[in-house]
Structures are given as C-alpha cells and as structure tokens.
Length: 620
Image 1 (spheres, rainbow, N blue to C red):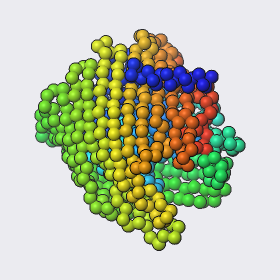
Image 2: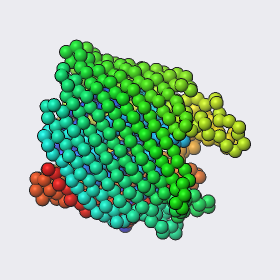
Image 3: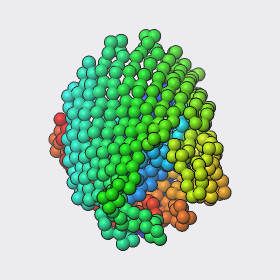
Image 4: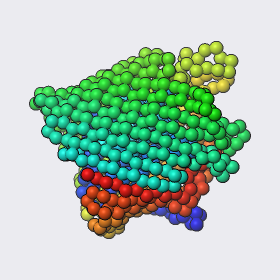
C-alpha cells in the first residue's frame, strides 16, 4: 500500500505544472478567495503592501487554512509554504527547525507581532518552533530570500512573520476541548471585545500528552516522552484622539518536555534516557501609532521584548540552564506622498543578552515604493547596521511586481542579507584552545528570484512558478582543529517553487505546492537535511451543508544526513473533518498518518504512526 501511495504522490508532483498556482496562499473554488488574499496587508515588507505588490516571493497561511487542516503547531503550518523544510527531533516538543530554500534555521528571522524571537542562547541563534501553538495565530507570512534590508541581522534565508489574533467587533469568544492518541488532551478558551474606545483579547491554551519515544521506537526505544504546555495570550488597544492608538501584545508559553539521551553508536546517537527540559518563552511589545499631516505620515514608536529561559534535568538533577533576552526600540515613519510615491524610514536599537554576555546593534533603514504606472510597483531599500562587536554592514534590496491584468502578474526581487556571529559563537572554545576566535566575520548572502502567476478568467484555476538562486559566504562552523568557530563554508542554492489550485466543482477544490531545491556547499556536496523534492497536495470539501473536510498528502524526498548517509523519502496522509451542530457549536476530528507510514525527519528520531483526535468547539 505504501509503495502504491508513493507512486501516486510522485505522479502528482510531476503533474504540478498542470495543477499549480500562486505561491501565496491556496485559492479556494471562488474568485473572491484570491481577491481576499491579495488585499491582505503584508506586515513583513514594512510598507503595508498587499500580496500582489510585494515583488518578493511570499506565502501566506491564514487562520482559516490552519483550521481547515486541523494543524495544532505553527511548525506544520509553516511547512505548507513551498521551499520551506522542517525538521524535528521527535514529536511532542522535540526541537523543531525551519529552513527556507536551503538556508540554515538560524538564518531565518522569526517575528511574533513584529518582535524577533530567535533564541540568543542557542549556538546559532535559531528559533525552536516546537512549542508554538496555532490557536492564537491569525496569519503567518513567509517572505523568502535575504531580507536584512527590512529586518537586519539573521535574515539570510527569509522571514517568518506571525500575527496573533485580534479581537472582533463586540463581545465574543471561543472555548474548545479535544482528546486524541497518546492520551493527548488539548483545550483552551478566549474572550474579546472591541468598540469605539478600544479593544482587548485574552486567551489560554493547554496541551498535555504522554507522547511517544523521541528516539525511534523501531530501534528498541520504548519509553514514552511526555509533553505539557500552557500558552497565554493578551492583546489590548486604546484608540486615542487624532486617530492615534496605543496597543500592547503579550504571548507567553511555559512547557515541560521529556527527551532522550545521547547514546554513542545508536542510530543518530540517540536512545532512551531520563531527560527533561523546562522552558519559559515570552514575546511582548508596547506600541504607539500617531498619524500626522492629515494622515499622510504614519509614525510608529515601539518597545519590544522577548525572553527565553531553559533548564534541563538528567535523572532529576539539573544539567544545563540558559537565559536569553532581547530588548528592542523601534521608530518607523511611513510617508504616503501621493498615489505613486511612498517612503518608509526608521531606526532600531536592539540589546541582546545570553546568560552573562551582552551585545547590541543599531540600524537605520529606508524603503521607497514607486508606482510609475498603476499596475507596476517598484520597491527599493537600503539599510545600515552597526554591530557592537563586528562593525557595520550595509544591505540593499530591489523588488518589482507587475500586474498586467486581473489574470496575469510578474514579480522579481534581488536582495542582500547578513548574520552577525552569535554570543555563543564568539565566546565558546574548547579542545586545547585558550580563547575564542576573535577574527569571526558576519555571514553574508545575495539572492535573486523571479515568478509569474496566472488566474483563469472564471477564477477557478490558478498557476504560479518561482525560480531562485542564492549564494551565501563566510558561513560560520565549528572546527575541532582550532577548538572554536571559523568562517569556513560557502553555500549555493538554486531551485523552483510551484503552487496551484483548481476548483473541481462547487464543493471540491484541489491545491498543490511543490519545491525543488539544489543546495550545495563550496565543495559541491549536498547540504544535510534538505530534500531536493518536497510538496503538499490538499483536497478540500466545503459544501453548503454542515460537514466539511480535507485530505492532505505531504511528501518529503530523500535527504542527506549529517553523517553522509541518506534518510529515506516519506509520504504522509492526513484527514480532517468538522460538523456544524449550530451557529455556535461544532465537532471536529483529525486522523494523522492514515496509512501508518514509518518515517524519520531526523536520523534516529521517531514520528507518530496512525493517530487520531476528536474535539468540540463553542463560539459565543
């Protein structure tokens, strides 16, 4: 059965040019769906552009799509974007990374409500997606390619910008509870209110699961590794005179995750062990927006804060702890000169602390949008960053979007990126070395992409394709010969992203995303954990009646492991469905890994087999 399914998936991927569409969000069976996506204001570009104006390759995953597919964690939602690769060290809280177009996970900036939340205590400074629940997410934007002109250091591979849910008009809320395999219980509630004077939203989500063994059970690891988390979200805004607004956002997650130990000689060098990680993560901001010059000049003043505390235990005894935080001050002005000219400019100061070490970076940026004709948008950007330890970097960006008609559009972008060495990379040394390498330089990248999107005249068929090429130099890696970090690596990545949607009738729609990525180091070796071929195929059923559902096929091609062996390709099939009992009440369910596929995302780490969950949701 698995062989037959894999063959069908490969045939579907080969047929992508026939059934693919825009690389933004998946279209539904009505033309209005595309118009709704295209009018979403994209926050990741800092200019308030819509999806059809950005020029850069962009994927948008909405709360509606997340709900349709029954996705619990942001990690699985981000994986919907073509060109994005995910890896996780075992389900239920295992360390989870996101890589864009072959770039490292630490080369992706993750924003929550505009605040960078990358972990300053980790060696590379990446963000761990394992604990980020989708219940409070309104939208995820994945902006691909180097974006340091927009967001400064670390934005070599791209940006993942997450917007949390805002309150709707009037008083309302939701409550839900679900139970599933591995004794997994998930539930939560929210309440919100919005009026002329202001608004607020409060929410809580909790997850408790016995989990599975992080180390693959097929290798004789039978000990279950549990996971427990609590996420609190608060959002509030006050509407001030003169259309000014004061707002605040807080997202807090506390989690306990059991994980397995280093076992030399085992597959992936991992096996059953008595390990526990306790984590506290916070992302918060306070902002003031003030429009001037009859609303033509928007001013944003923001203070942002993110913090992560980690403590690990082995056999109940503390074995590791880390505490890192970021404090950000930002000003941005956006001048809408007229219909053809718009300018955004600003300054940022960021202070980063990892345990007892501190560093800071200052940035100045300017972005200019020109519309020489109504259907052509050209964006240019320049940014200057001055790092306390590594001096200055200047990055540039140029993008264009040309909407020839309602049915055909072109886009292209070129950009530069850089990543300053992390605090860990500049302070760690071992193996006979007497001090860390003081000669480390920032990693730098340059990339180009171009794409085309087409929509049929009846709005029922959509196609899209993007080609890209990226080169990254001075990659930082650890060298045991010197007992520290060196700029020793170079990476070239080229590829193709295809996406599409097709209405099969009034109730059925088909969407598909595919990516081909050829990522190699300077010696021509394939980068580990990057499949050349990957894709998703989704069949959605949405009649006028109370029942709706979807079938998701996710394919991941073979990958090279870090030890130069090969990890097999895999195909997973998931089912979701929901039944509306009334205007305020619905039941829903999800079956994951329908055909009990035995696969690994990372060598030695297991994944859940056939599993299911059932839930009920009340809206009031």
